Length: 500
Image (tube, rainbow, N blue to C red; front, top):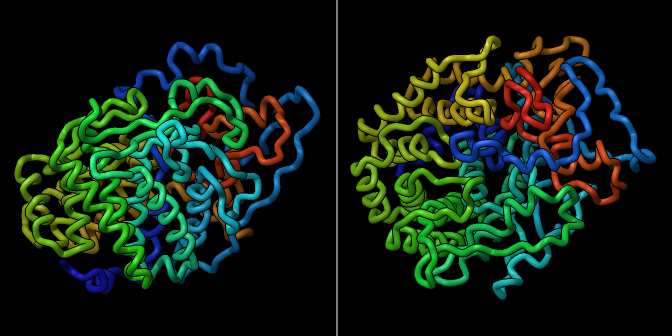
């Protein structure tokens, strides 16, 4: 394995937190593309509450919605201590890293710990797994809902862990290393629970359709929350993609806890990752449990991804051989994007890092080069899709920054990635306000003079439009701190998303 420290030495000082910022600004679990789920709400959307969202434009105050009852109790304030930007940084990347982690923290399900920093969150879904005789509490809720979809959840954890692995010193310097480890342990503990025996992995808790018909908070929901298993035997679907991604997440996270000195916990995660990978690789097949919300297009990229991370974590060559065999079989040579369903760009970089073989470098160069030449919005955002347009650009920016550290599109890749992240942090709306030292407007809630005020979240609709009392009301940090990647270029059918 190549050493992480050697790659760090090649990084320009001025960009040492930029890639870490890109890693933290990952949308927890992306909304499905239209080809995966035509019409997010389907025809049933007509039964949704029809209160019109207030019109909002950057730089203007948000008009108050028409009140149906008395005003809600004021929300407790939540802040991230202001950090001092590094010399040469246009934007305060360390501050954004802290704000982004608040999103993951606010997505927590289960019994919240004493160090919970989200004042309006409470314990929720405390009976998850009871229907199958297990404790499946914990993990992150999905997007703006209350379902726990483990496939995209695990990918979010893997990528966040990858960012910390590559940019450990930047996370430490920003004062966010412990918070990042705390979030990753929360998900890792949950994923371990979901693998109660060698043949089973619980891939989802909660019903997507039922959840979309519920307009309340996680803390007060009483709906049935079935647990769905994949794996070997019992008439189950194989679920190799989801199981492989969980193995990758645990292997990547183990590296961090090993470096942090908790070798016992790291070994526990590695052991579980090995068991998961054995199940995914020896019982190959797809799954449809999470459709139409999350549809896996293939599972071989997840298997190669998991094997690569297990090699990174253990140094056992069998895992590297497996990853390379899958790659040579055609799994990962090209990719449309880097996202919850597309791991090939990550596999390319990991295998090049681990072997220095030119094929992996060439394929990674092709992906980064394609991203650099991507068509853009009028103000410069590389555009992949209307579902999570900022997300796709940020994910590709992270890939470009890591690739640059291994000699792939070193200069133009860094320049392009910096442009994409800076677009989201303020370049799209005038840059820095010299009077305040903050951007006039950013896509990261909580950062800048102004930021998105209309969110794609169930609870925000409920509390802003219906004025349900707000004590212990929110499952999501969308009120202040969502990552920017779900904000599309056009309004959605029911919710106003911030325009570019």
